[in-house]
Amino acid sequence: LAKTTQPISMDSYEGQEVNITCSHNNIATNDYITWYQQFPSQGPRFIIQGYKTKVTNEVASLFIPADRKSSTLSLPRVSLSDTAVYYCLVEAGYGGATNKLIFGTGTLLAVQP
Amino acid sequence: ETGVTQTPRHLVMGMTNKKSLKCEQHLGHNAMYWYKQSAKKPLELMFVYSLEERVENNSVPSRFSPECPNSSHLFLHLHTLQPEDSALYLCASSQEGTANYGYTFGSGTRLTVV
Image (cartoon, rainbow over the protein chains, first blue to last red):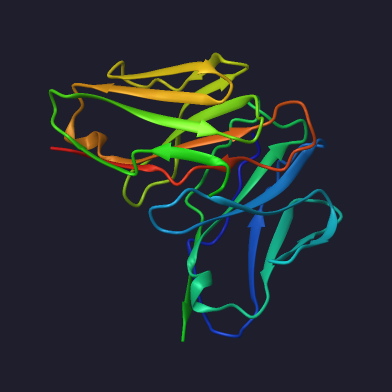
């Protein structure tokens, strides 16, 4: 499993755009990059997934450079409710039990008013 | 609701008690997982079930006993736990062998061992 590295914490203010970068130097050819969000005392929630270039959904954008050794989660105009831990993971593209998601410490995003 | 339901949400048990955590998924997935999350620690993978068969046990103490009677249900049976077992226990499911859209987690059971 590719190891990921991301900042332990980040601070932001309401209305700002937040970019969280994750390094995954040993990513394999069939690996996807997935980001999860976790609020206190809740399970992680899938945010976005991508393989290369850019992916956008109603919540966030994911930027992946050509070498795929890093990725950046972009949250537009954050609000207080976006305060959470954000995890970057690398998952094999075929999914399922063989993936065995291994979580790191994630990035604690604190949004201030 | 995420499609993965865990009960109970909160549980307080003594060290000599026997209790069970229940997880049910309504997503048609064929793989299910138990994770443990202690305070200020990363999620730890405990058990993996694929097609109702246990495929991994991450060196979990025998006082935790999983059961997967069918692809929709997963249990974690608890007995003679220790205070350090107090944590948030999370269940997740996924679909093996298809385009990957990640795991779906339940809301967890907050366990306190006294």
